[in-house]
Length: 217
Image (tube, rainbow, N blue to C red; front, top):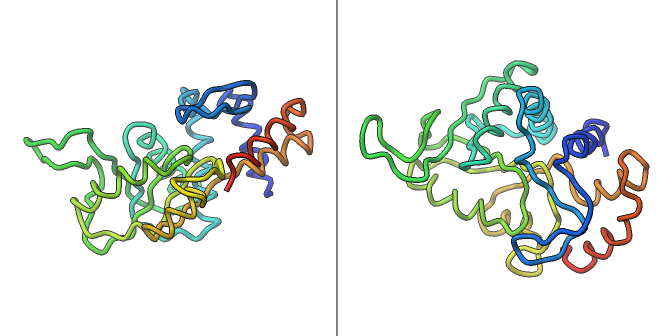
């Protein structure tokens, strides 16, 4: 684990985005941890978050011309990442996001921001991936807009859980759609950070490992 990843885990804990306890997830699963990206609420928080995404973008050599932020949580994430890449790394990329409904007046269309053009390489920016539902929802919208190549997706945390089958949602994304999903950190790295004492939560280690053994891919 790199230092920026360890710092990102601390950042999540400090801002109560990563919490430990007893949580019931949308899937119905009982989990000993919870990630709530809605806790990022200030300019300082979103600026730091954008830099973590930018570091992940650069680390994995993503070549996208445009970042797509699926509505709603993906919108500020894509904007923050594009800003960090420009401000801190001299890399100017476009960003856009989808509307919930196609606009039939004015400029029209499904997307706001950078125009998607045939042949462009794009990268989707999201918060977490559990089942891959968000990816499956945004891909048809992108396909209706232009024949772009969705080569990558960046998320903050890979929960490393099974998707629709026995494989992880990240593995399914590549096998089904050819989309490589990169995460700033994984659940294993969060567990490692607890073990190292980088963040509190050692009393939850047993439950974290049990959860990983039961639902992990």
